[in-house]
Image (cartoon, rainbow, N blue to C red; front, side):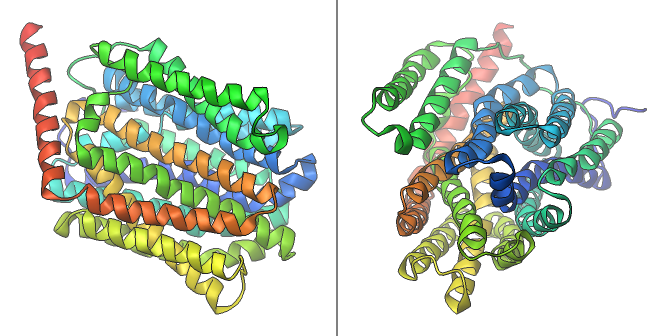
Length: 475
C-alpha cells in the first residue's frame, strides 16, 4: 500500500480526507463514552456494580487517557505522527474487543485502561496532524470547528446507538462497535495520511510521566472513594496528600528539564491557560451531566436504554448544531463570544434542573437539555483553537496533548464529584455543581480573551520560537 510522502503538500481533497480520518478517531473515542453512559444501568445489573464501580468503569478510562496524552503527543512529534496514530488505533481496537469479552467488573476496568492507552495516541496526535495539514489560519479554524462538531455527532449518535444496542444485544455490543470503525480508520490512515514530525526530537521524561500518573490517579481515587471510606480516613487523606506532593514535584522538577513532558512555559500565555482551565470545567460539567441524567432516567424514572437515549437527543442535536457554528465564530470574531455564550448556557441548564430538582420531563427538561447542548457545542472549538494556534507548529503535539488532557481530567473529575454527591443522596447538589461549571467558563472566557491576554500569547510564542531557533543553530 502506498504511503503519502513525508512533508507532502496535500490538495484540498487530500486535506479533507485527512480531516475525515482524524475525526473518525475522535468519533470512536467519544462514542465509547457517550454510548457507555446509557449502558450503565444494564452494566450495573449484569455485573452487580455499585455507584463507585460505575464511576471506575468510566474514570479508569479517562484518568489513564489523561495520564498518557502528553506523552503520546510529544512522542508523535518525535517518532512520527502517523506511526503513533496507527499504533493507537490498533491498541484501542484490541482493548475494545477485550472489554466486550470481560467476564466481570475488575476485568472490564483493566481492559478499559488498555483501551485508554490506545485512545491517548489518537486525539492529541490527530489534532496535531490537522494543525500541520491546514496551514491557512481560517481554514484551520474551520477544520477545528468540524473536529469539535464530531463531539456533537458522538453525543447525538452515541445515546441512540448505545440505547438501541443495549436494548437489542446488551452492553457488550457497544465495545464491538469500535472494531469495524477502528479497522476502517487503520486502512484510511495508511492510504491517505502523510507522515510528519517535529524538526527536533524531544527526549522522554519518565519522572514527569510518573508524577502525572500519581497526581491524577490519587486525586480521582480520593474523590470517588471518599464517600465510602470517609473523608477523614487515613487512606483518603493519604491520597490527597500524594496528589499534592505529585503536583509540587511537577512544579519543581519540570522547569528544570530542557525538554519536559509538561511545557509549563505555555502557561505564561493567558489564553492558553484559560483554554486549559475552561476545558477542565466544561468537561467536568459534561461528565457529571451525562452520568447524572442517564442514571436518573433509567434507575429513577424506569426508562429503557433506548428511551433514555431519545431523551438525550435534544442536548445532542444542539451540540451537533452549534459545534461547527462555534468554529465559524472563532474564525471571524475570536474566542470570547462563543465562550461567554457557552458558559451562560451551561450555567442556565444546571440552575434550571436544580430549581426543578432534577425533573427530567416536560418543558423545563427540554429547555435545560437544549441549553446544555448549546453551551457544550460552543465551547469546544475555542478551546482547541486557542491551545494550538498560538504555539509553534513544532510544539503542536505537546500543546494539543495538554488541551486534550484538560478535557479528560475534567470529565474524570466531573464523574467523580457528581457521582459522589449522587451516592450521598444529594442529587440537587450535582445540578448546582454543573451550574458552577458554566459560571466558571463564562468568567474565564471574559478574563482570558482580551488584548492583554493576546499580548501574553504573542510573547510566549515568540519565546518558544526563539528557543527553537537557538537550538537549531546550536545543532
